[in-house]
Image (cartoon, rainbow, N blue to C red):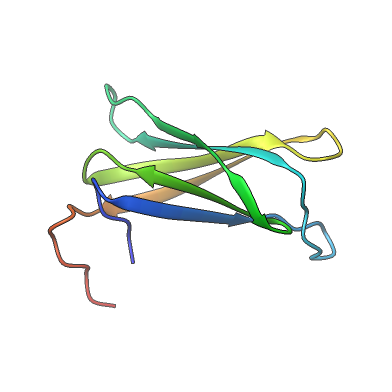
Length: 99
């Protein structure tokens, strides 16, 4: 289900190495950007909730299309960035689209 604006949204990211083993101990940041100019990004630190699984809690300010960016540093010092398109964040009072 797409996230809803002006409500709490939990974002989870899983990091794994090339063999599929979880990568713990990373320092990650989560940024959410509206796809049109003029909106300030929503930024939070990601917290490791289990080995290789990181979580952030955000409140997106309005409905529309967003880009989520996870960035940070792995325990070995390598930097990572991953961008994900999140189209059609819905208004909080709008029903979720059928699946």
